[in-house]
Image (cartoon, rainbow, N blue to C red):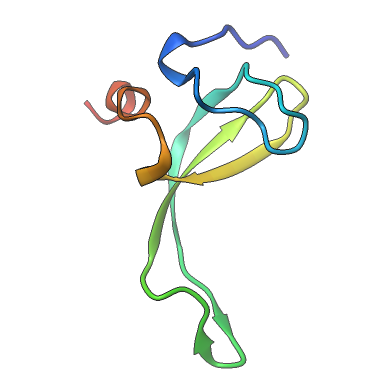
Length: 75
């Protein structure tokens, strides 16, 4: 797989291999979880999915992503 570097996502790196060439997958996940019947997170968290050239898929909270990186996919 070949991923072209994106200058709008220069602050995003893969947490598994530290590769800074990542691509934002065209998906969004609303994350919530329970543990022993209790909410594990206080509120549903919107997450964005990323993939690196080594096929590592990882998720970041939308609010932690550089705003310009999200704008190109929400417009």
